[in-house]
Amino acid sequence: MKIAQQYYLPLLSLLFSIVFSPTVVVAQDAGNDSSTKEVSLFLDKWHKAAAEADEDVFFSSIAEDGIYIGTDDHEHWDKKTFWEFAEPHFQKEKAWDFTPYERHIHHSKDGEFVWFSELLHTWMGTCRGSGVVIKKGKAYKIKQYHLSVTVPNEKIKDFIALVEAGDR
Image (cartoon, rainbow, N blue to C red):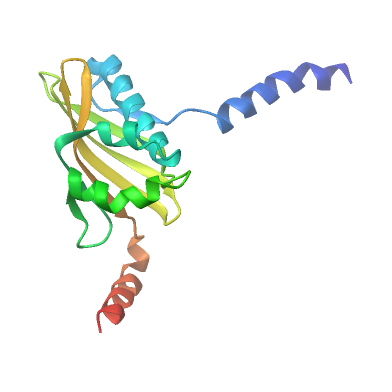
């Protein structure tokens, strides 16, 4: 019994850390580790703001000339138009909940531009988000975000047929 108790706490601790671990960040340019962490935290905060319907944080994270590209072919919005679309969702207690679980971050040499891609758990299944973030002073702003639904290669023909059937 003592042996089981001896391993119980470390095992429980390991399980807790796996279940509640932060976003997995894959840094592509190790020279900017602190900046990579800052950008990742900024993006996590942005996603959390949507999940909590915090429109102030969510929309203040997008540059004034920022663009949001959604999954539908007509969803190419400037900030104002995106707000008009999203505002009814943010009036609820939760807009949408996209949880990143893998992220790749790259930086320009001067640190002003960051581009990234991330995999997300969503109500649509696995999605990919990608975008460009700029740094002005100490603040980051999203210049462009592009959300896309992922389709496994072995299912692409069925996906194409489904989309084409809807166009008829």
